[in-house]
Length: 150
Image 1 (tube, helix red, strand yellow):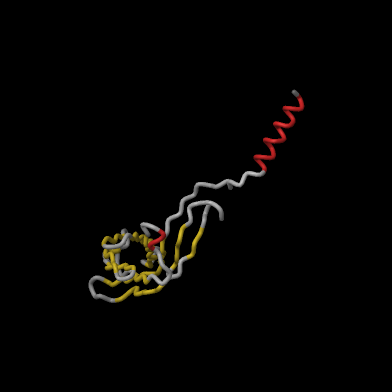
Image 2 (cartoon, rainbow, N blue to C red):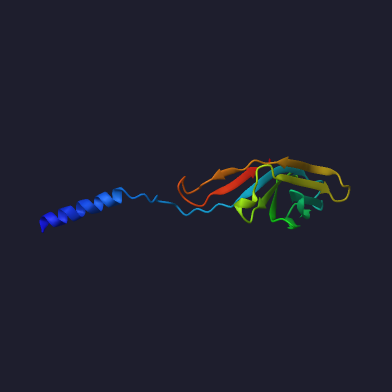
């Protein structure tokens, strides 16, 4: 009986040590393209027009010192943060419905105009190359594709 227990324990340790299944965390990651740039507001009432595009499909909206929003043919979000002197940082994230929709060479545009004068504050058009990441480890899902156009 004692021999049987030792053999069973040894077999159990051998099987668990040889397991090929990796231990994976459960972090998620979106497939995105990120932009960040500076803006200068003239006053608290300044309203800016923002256009964001991927391969010619666009979303449009407005940005003020307190809010930023876009809507249209692509899925994108924007945020604004303001320091005490009226300088702002605009962040835009283009969201992919599927990582397979992201192809190296995709052309992204972020354009911001001062609403009252059409003065160009940001005008960036850039093709991107995506980087694939696996936040839970090299053998674990999910894999995500992202790029930074700043």
